[in-house]
Amino acid sequence: MENRNLFAALRAAFPQDLDRVAVETDTGLHYSWRDLDRGTAMIANLLASLGLQEGARIAVQVEKSVEAMMLYLATLRAGYVFLPLNTAYQKAEIDYFVGNAEPEVVVCTPANFGWVSKIAFQAGTKHVFALGDDRSGSLLERAAQQSDEHALVEKSADDLAAIVYTSGTTGRSKGAMLTHGNLLSNAEVLKDYWGWTEGDVLIHALPIFHVHGLFVAIHGALLNGSKMIWLAKFDPKKVIERLPDATVFMGVPTLYVRMLAEPALTEPACRNMRLFISGSAPLLMETFSAWKERTGHTILERYGMSETIMLTSNPYHEAEGERRGGTVGFPLPGVSVRVRDDQGNALAAGEIGNIQVKGPNVFKGYWRMPEKTKEEFTEDGWFKTGDVGRIDELRYVTIVGRSKDLIISGGYNVYPAEIEGYINDMPGVAESAVVGVPHPDFGEVGVALVVPKADTQIDGEQIVATLKSQLANFKIPKRCFVVPELPRNTMGKVQKNLLRDEHKSLFQQGT
Image 1 (cartoon, rainbow, N blue to C red):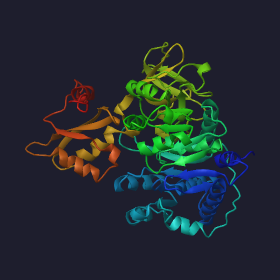
Image 2 (image 1 turned 180 degrees about the vertical axis):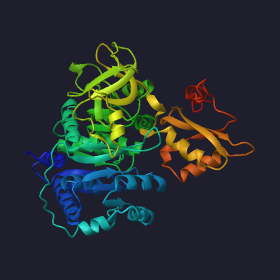
Image 3 (image 1 turned 45 degrees about the horizontal axis):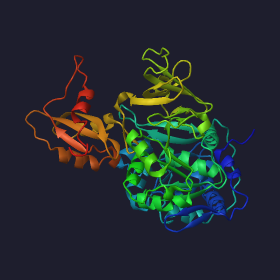
Image 4 (image 1 turned 60 degrees about the horizontal axis):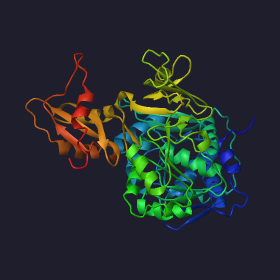
C-alpha cells in the first residue's frame, strides 16, 4: 500500500538543503527545515511512547507558535487525529468538546492548565500537557528527551487526520471528520491552481485553530517548500512592513479592511507580492475595489468550509478568466458544485438556491453523528453546504446568503441558537433572538434581542458581561436590547428577517 499519510507528502516537498530557513517569526527566531523535521520527530516519538489507541484524538488549545504547528505535523506523522480548538473557548465549550471527542491527549496553555486538566481528567483523558507560545511547557520538556528520528506511520487516504468542530445551528457543535486524502487532495489542487512557485514566501498572520490558517496556509507553504514569515497575531503595520519580503498573503476580509486604514499600504510596498487571497467571510465590493486602487493587486476570493476545505476559487491565471469581485470564482478542479431548490430540483444558471458539493475534499461525516451525517448528504451523495447562492452562465459561483441564520463575524462562524441557549438560561429571561447585522470592520456582528419574564427587570449590558464569562469573544453580541416581545409569523416562528432589517444600520458610520 502506498503511504497516503499527509505528512509524507509535506516532508517530500522539503527543500534538499534542510538548513535553509523554513519559518521566520516576528520575535526574530529562525527555524530551518531540519528544525521542523527534528522537532516533529521528537514530538511524534513522545506521542508514540504514550501507548495510545489507534485513531487516538489529540485535542489542542494553545496560542499560535511554530511549536504548535510542529505538534499538528507530529500528530499526522505519528498517525493520530488532530483536534484544534479555538483559543477563545471557555470552560463550558471545552467541557463539551472533551466529553464529545474523548481525546487521549489534551494540550493547553500553561496559564489554563489548572482548569483544562481538571475537565480533561474528569472526562477520562489520560495525558494533559502544557505548551506556551514562548517554547515553555511540559510537552516540549518531555519531547526533548526523545529521539529526533521517527519512522513515519503508514496511513490510507481514508484514515482520519483531523476533527474540526463547527458549531451546530441547534447549538450543538459537530465534529467534521477530515481524512488524509481530503487534506492532501485539496492542498495539491491549490498548489497548482494558485500558481505556487519556487521562491514563494508566505506571510502567515492567521490563527492556526481554523481551517484557513492551519490547512490552507500551512499546507500551501509546506507542499511548495516555501518559507513562512510567521506573525503570532495579525498586526496591519507589521504585515505591511514585511510585504516586500513576501509573495503570498492569506487573510479574512477584516484584515484587508485594517490594512487599508494604514497609509503605509502602497503599490511600492506590494512590489514583490504575487497573490493576495481572501476567504472565511464575504468580501465587500468596497474593500475589493479600494484594495485594487491602492495596491494595483486584485484580491483573489475563494470559498470553503470546515467540512470541505476549499471548494471554489477565483482564477489565478488571467487566461482562465477575471477575478470577479462579489463572487467566489469557479469550482476547483475535481470539485463539483450544483444549486438546487428546496425540493432538490436543478436550477437554471443564475437562479438562487441551495449549494451542494461533491469531491475528494468533502469530509467523511460528523463525529459520532451518523443520523446528522446522513441528513446532510443527498441520496446521490452530494453534501448540503447550508449556503445559498447561484452559478452564472460563465460558472462563477456567488454566495448570496446562508440558510439557518449563520453569522460570520471576522471570519468566524457564529450560530445564534448556541448564544440564545445561554441567554435563555439566565435569570429573568423569557426568550431571546440573536441576529447578524452589517459591521464595517467584522463584516457582520451579532445583536441580541431579549424579552424579560413578567414583572422582571433585566439589563442588556449585564447579559453581555455574563456571556463574556461563558463564550468565546467572537460569539458575544456587540449590542443587547431588552424588548417587550419578538415579532412572529402566523406559525409562531420568530421573524429574524424583520429584526435584521430593524437593526441593519446600527453600526454604519455616522449613525
